[in-house]
Length: 98
Image 1 (tube, rainbow, N blue to C red):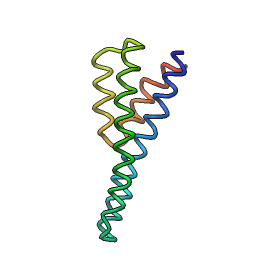
Image 2: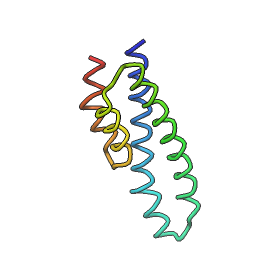
Image 3: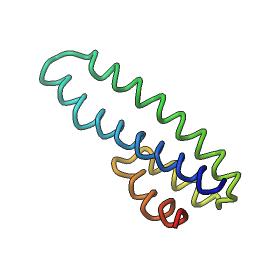
Image 4: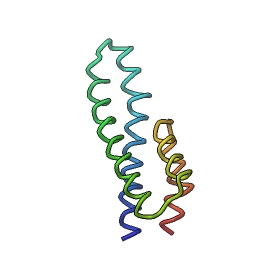
């Protein structure tokens, strides 16, 4: 059960991280270039949903696997930093899966 939960958290972290990068480095520049705010609106909605799913899954995973408050807070903060979820995955999640 632990591996399945970690794997789901890992996949969701990657999806959330990619959505943040897409928003920051593709949608926002295209909005500036094309003058079309709908791109950011749609990508932002997807990112927002994925972020909320990530936070919920982070909370349940941290509680079920008895993560420390420091590790849980770090995962939450890094979700707001470009490439942060990838770093957290490599440092903690992938390590726990092996």
